[in-house]
Length: 233
Length: 196
Image 1 (tube, rainbow over the protein chains, first blue to last red):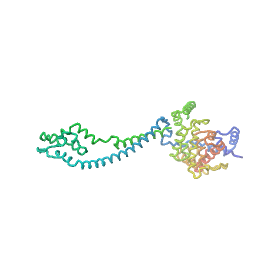
Image 2: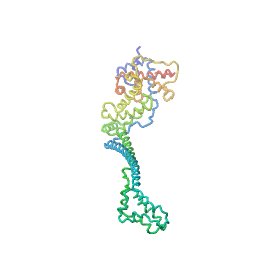
Image 3: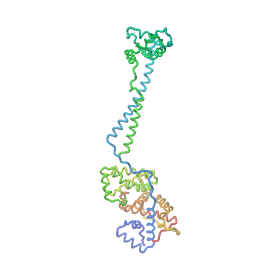
């Protein structure tokens, strides 16, 4: 007797054509061994079906989010802006580090050039508050032409500016009226303007921290945009 | 997708083909767990299986315009199965070789040598299920794939032939050989089959 072993699985799956199915069924009527095999294969199928389902540890369906068309150009722009800001940070840091050295050198030269004038300008402020015989800051205050009194070097200008601040306590301490001439001269608007011109404030664009902050902001924005684009389709 | 009206599935498929991401996500979510259990039993590692299923679903979305003929479920299983088998081949030294040994008709039936428990009463028995899991894991990958597609996922032979890109005769042979191998493992562990 030829056992239809190879057809038994297809038989229990209902995958045989009519003729093959009839042949198997006819054989099963007379063959206890093949009936046992069919039962065993059915039981095996039931066991495979009964296996517990493994569960994924995360969501497997990708998040299909379409990105706006302007997102990619914006990411490129932010990346370039971040790079440019880093460059400007380095450049401005170099400029601001070199500028004090240059101005220090210039100040030394100017101080040497102005010589005694600067020393004299400082003399009144260095006097004790109660000294009544001192003639304070004679050059700027007493000059008939203020243009001559205007110092051409910044250290001298600094002295003129500091005049009121250092002399004012003296005035409160009972300095004679003649001693307050220097403050009056320092408050002259023309002198104040010259003082401002001779010691200009650095431009905010030369502040390296501004560029560093801008580089960080643009870099973070570029990374966020990149992640957003990667998560989309 | 049991209990889901075919019309609703068709509507979701049409919307997904038209670019509706939510419709595709809805369809994919219905098969997510089934795809995972199928792939994890092919490749054997959970992390690889998760990556494969995610990639397969993403790939399905990108190529949904080319979907035709098969049922949507069979189409998803085809993509995931191919990726899983590719992953197994890539682990081998020579990936061009087939995963299975050549089919032949010399299938042996081990017979019980001693009385044991009835197989039909073992469903739910943890030890028996572990033995089945081990036996499945020891099968050649393409036999295991065909058997899982039939016994666990319930695909017809014709669908399995399309999913695995082989002839129906090959599907029939792989399922029978795989099922018989699992049955032989259980018999070897002392269980006896139910009387026919």
